[in-house]
Amino acid sequence: SAVTLAFSPYARELKKWMDMAKENGHEVLIEVPMESKEFPAQDPGPLGLLTSLEEKELSDRLEKILKSAEGAVGVLDTMGSQYRESDTHISTVFTKLSQESLYYVQGRPGIRVGESNVPTAVADVLIDERPFRAAIDARLDYLERLAKYQGSAVATVGAKPVSFERLVMWMEQIADKGVSLAPVSQVLIR
Image (cartoon, rainbow, N blue to C red; front, top):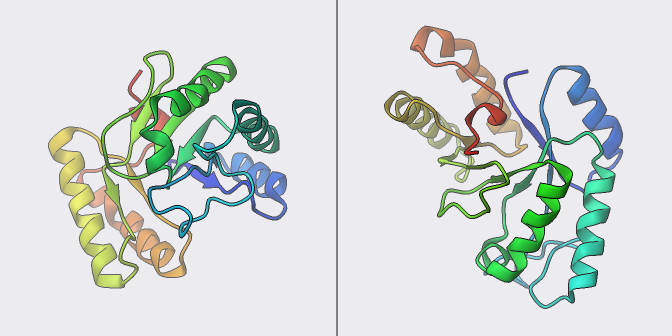
């Protein structure tokens, strides 16, 4: 339960998976697909927030995502580099998050964006950017050292079998290493 889980708005049976996660004590986020600098090669899909869309369409898409994820405590942005860097566009997201009392997690390391009235967190480490056992283990080791140095660290991990395998093994040993896990809400910048 110390691990926050994020779900894609495109997931089949989204409500079922989110309910199951919450029943098992997890905080739940919904991913908000946003335009990246690699768009259109990296397509955020039919609900994606794009800088080329009219404000009404953007608002409708965001509303649809949030409605589909009732019970989520925040949103996760994993790809939205282009959208995130447009102050005009990202401010509409933060306005909606403020209205809904949701928080924002930037799933990739980088410059923190946001508004002071919306709690935020920025990932310090992307654990499985290179999805190989040795690379994942090295990133988990770095995460431990960073958390000890900073007092806390935020990491994101994808839903890949190898990532899950390495994460579970690491979690079994973490108590002996002087580090504890906590939901992302415990390290938000408020």
